[in-house]
Amino acid sequence: GAVVSQHPSRVICKSGTSVKIECRSLDFQATTMFWYRQFPKKSLMLMATSNEGSKATYEQGVEKDKFLINHASLTLSTLTVTSAHPEDSSFYICSALQGGFYSNQPQHFGDGTRLSIL
Amino acid sequence: AQTVTQSQPEMSVQEAETVTLSCTYDTSESNYYLFWYKQPPSRQMILVIRQEAYKQQNATENRFSVNFQKAAKSFSLKISDSQLGDTAMYFCAFMNSNTGKLIFGQGTTLQVKP
Image: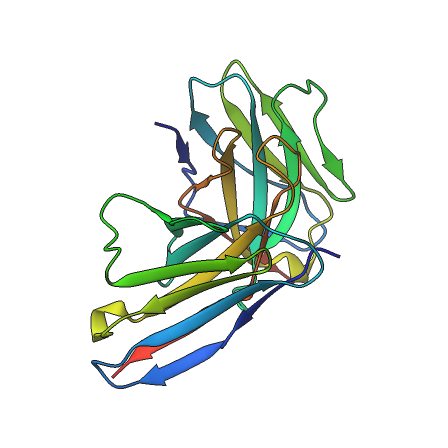
């Protein structure tokens, strides 16, 4: 149980295009999902918290107009990288929180998306 | 603000031996959760073990166990009988119980040698 599907797994596109990444909780409802960015051999950096039915909360230094997050249902959050440039190339990972903040359930991670902007 | 520190960027261990990965954290909260995640070359994040801060007993999952020292804010991971499949990057993480956010340490790359 507690499977999170992230799609696509790999994207290669030209500079200036927008890219959408989907994160789905397959067998549980997730009112809260998280988006991370990871550079090679580095740690995960939290970008934003995605809340179902409300605006996402972005971490300091993350451009909300560059990284659009939509959490329209209890099982789906999307991250859109708008007008992507080579410096946006990275590994993006989502996670979904099963249960509330006070539950002892951990975050469940998707398999990540490798984004390459040419 | 909470911080998590892993002071060992790289470690290696012989197959079947035991290795301990260190982690310290800083927080003013009394209720929180701690985790160890494994990230193999496939880059999938795999939960290894978790610890509730209010529990004094150290968590154990098969070959994996933790040494949780709440007063010292230390949370080390011990891997017994290391296997080649344990080769991965390991992340210590702190979860804020108010927000659900995970704060990760810098990671430790573990190489298990045959």
